[in-house]
Length: 168
Image (cartoon, rainbow, N blue to C red; front, side, top):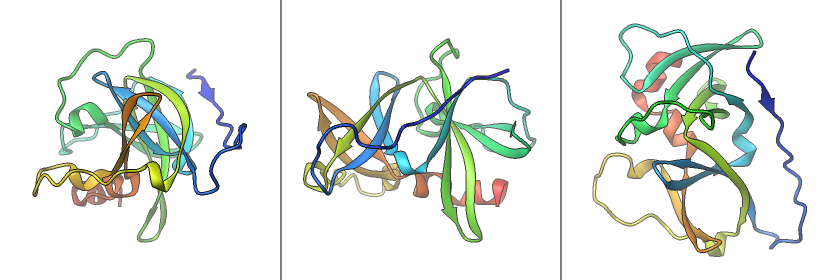
């Protein structure tokens, strides 16, 4: 049975009052982050049940304590090269607002990295790349411990039009 990792969302050090906590994770050696308040849990990778006629990045569904949860491969969603799942591969289960309440979805990532605090002043807007696919899901960029972290807007990512049809 997959193990679950609980998250401690309390700040353990003094940080700026406007700082928000982000769970950071790795995809193709790049560090990304999501608002920790959207994270429900982190699960080790386990198989999912595929669904017909879904985009390639939708791996299928899993049963999460009686709830059916759609799971997407974030590497594929972002157009990155695929790689075999390994011992550090996890599913980050996110709860995001939706038209009729909230939606729970899982994103498969290479590894979970850390929880970091980023203030609004430290967050830079995403670069203007025109209408490039995927830039609408980038909330901002921040430098944490001399590494660039791409902050993903999970609400935008998981409420994309094609996902609404699948999970709506």
